[in-house]
Image (tube, rainbow, N blue to C red; front, side, top):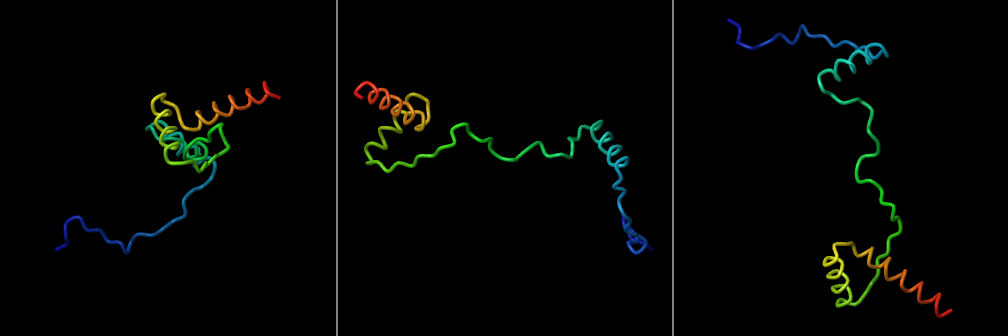
Length: 98
């Protein structure tokens, strides 16, 4: 007596998958009908690059670091935005004095 739900794996044979353009197009069309997404990657995975590409890692005194972090959080901006604004003020002041 055979076991229920058993198959004879000895009779199984591997065969090459049809990789022709027609077969792939047909499989893609059938997949799209059933809600599958295209095979091509949508682009580079991960986080999108920021328009701000420069990085500044300043070493500052602990109380200065805390004040910058608190101000950024209070205003709802990043610390980098504060540094950009401070730099703009510095440049404006230098052009007036020079």
